[in-house]
Length: 625
Picture 1 (cartoon, helix red, strand yellow):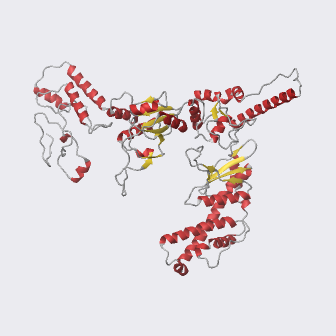
Picture 2 (picture 1 turned 180 degrees about the vertical axis):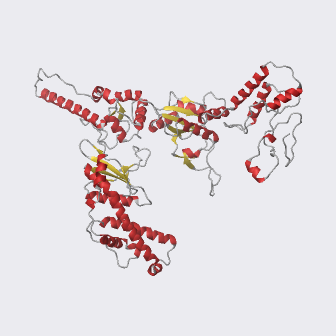
């Protein structure tokens, strides 16, 4: 059967024999919600409880300004007996396929009517887009009506006789269902497929639930013992001599007894993140961005405790509360010990840039954007080089997180929308340390292993939050060295200009220090010509002069961290580089065909040996000697 209508998850069976599963419906051009509603009606027949889960579209669900959760109409969560859920998951694709077939038949009938004389007359003053809208509306209404009456004995919906054809979808669908015949929806599943789904169910015990049950049993027993002693003291009775007074077992004592077992409980990446964040807080508080599911799992493992603002006489679970207030969820001693044993998450902080994005088209073309995502707002070469290095350090997001340190907005994630600004770090109006510490705590990076990519001003701002962090650009003397160091990170196979100069100088010094006999000028020219160099008669350039020439080439280049505009030859060069030695640009080479490369006045040039200053006129060409 076709499974493109929905996606089934694995059935999970708890120790009480109750099963849970979920069905996900793709959007499919607006058909996903209608299909989910149809399967919900089918779940009633199979006696399975179904509901849409709630989702929160806000970066901070604990904020008082957060909107109320909305139902996810493209996801259906099922709960009930394992056998009934397996049968429903097997019958759902078959049910949707039959209802879709009925809706397709109804749409074809509408198409025949639209092409008939009556349809042409009714749609005479309707354009093409309007006709498509009517057809789409007719098919959607036909699908909903077919799902309502397929396999169910019901009366057709009331449809006015004078209604247009696109408003009679319910009547057409009911006629098609009636012509289809009687169908038993309770027997629509495949027995073999249902058994296969049930056999693949997850019946593994939940370690968090077992740890919570053991802790709850210990607390209940301690509370009963305390009640017995209290009533005995009120009645003036004494405890038996064989019975020793027992104090109430605190949650920390229960966790210490289970310490060896709790350390074996695996933690997810998100749970480790919030555990380190709470450990970095002076009071051990968890941020508001930590959801209830993560807090409940950490509480079941014994790493979190909840101190409600009122004393109700017994300890409550976080899972039973709606939303704990900030500052009430704290880290236990066992949680601090576990955080010290876990590896910290890697976070790379990238400095912002001065060059911002501009509009590509429209009436504001070429003007700075009003606001954009933080990952798309900065377009400078320096910031892009840092972003490339950050992607390499975090393995494209698989080994860590990348955030931007903005001089105005502080720590922001790459997908967060921020307004455009013009502010340099260290200037009046720069974000303060208290704001950065609060942002780091809310983002869950205050306890992470932080690497900062930026100048001294941004390293100083990072020092307001973290005591120990790695500043990879510390000790550099300018943007050129910083770009070179960044290039070493995201392109380690490249060779820097300094390495090339050192290799050339070392080779030439080795050649000069070798004992050689005095040779004639012609022999020198022949030896150097064999090595691939062009020299004048009787002239030899020492290694120091060659290193100075290469240094001049490096100083004349544009400030970037990449390769030279042309590769350096391995042999010793004894003449300066000119425009005639460099290849022409590809764009100009296609427009005009020159015998040799044209020389541009803005390109760096040097005179050939034996000639004076090069004088090049307009449209003149320089040939190789």
